[in-house]
Image (cartoon, rainbow, N blue to C red; front, side):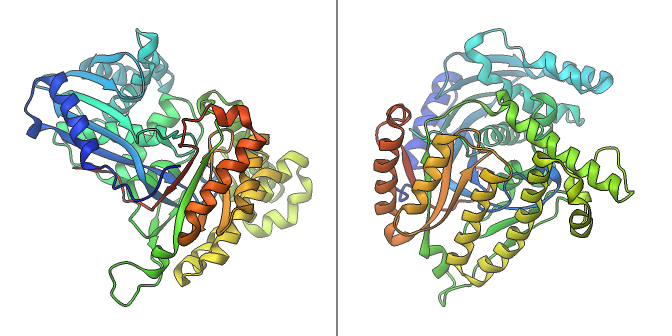
Length: 440
């Protein structure tokens, strides 16, 4: 079991990555820079970001660390702490292909995702970052030499590690080329990586959380207007750390499932079903649109015409509208410091994800149910899309270690094979809220 007292990134981790970059580049250690990109959780707002819904998020004190030095030319040279092989490309070749894609349509981006070496497919994210930056008119002159890794021993499934990686590369290339790009612009750039480059039909929740969050706050994001605000809990008398923030910990429990989201047909199918439900509801209200999403449908229209939806579409729509209500109720509970009621809403979100959105599978559902039985847990749900990965829970700080031990033991009884594939001692993580992505 991993505790939450680790400072991330730790000095030892920074030193380790710095040394790797020095060995790769032959440069002085003082020249090494770091892109810090945290993982995120979404307590409320499950599966509604792609429909323009309002969501909540926060980052944790674990994530992606990219150590790098700017190249003297356009060359990019990368190694990974998790994957074999290396990436050697030039920003010039990506810039040319990005221009072709801009001229001929985003389908041309498919040509960019074909690395020469099978073991270097992890380099597609750096290609995607270059594609996004240059497609939007940023002409890069300098590449980077860098080493990228995630928090040691942590299975990042369900924590939006892909968005964290994309953001890390964006920040590094922007820093190396002295580009001044705002967090909201980078949200759009990472959307291009996910939607256009990889063809994933997700919304902007992941990158928004990673780029906008602030420790101790709940980040509220309107995925339709892209407006956001930070919801602060009540302050303690000393104003240094809220009693609310000290009252809870975040538990991440890993299932052992690692199927890549981009190869899971269930995700894009659910998005299409939500859009079809929106189309039918809008047509019934004589308000047809070319690309309908459920946020275009008012609660009144939904109530008046939901009987026109066949079973699957009715379930997707019910999840959307009930989850939106939970989000706004949750914002009130967070602002008032009521972690118990907030936790109940998180659990209701998890149940709706299973019953109405119909994601998850037996191991994940068992893990979710195990968390709800654990001592001190306020609420739990799937983390990420719910087709693999982990579950997240909020737990009373003083009972966090006890709860984590309970979950580790009980889940291993239910799924001994999957549990055996998780690194020893890494099945359950107790962590704290974190800060936004940044260069240090």
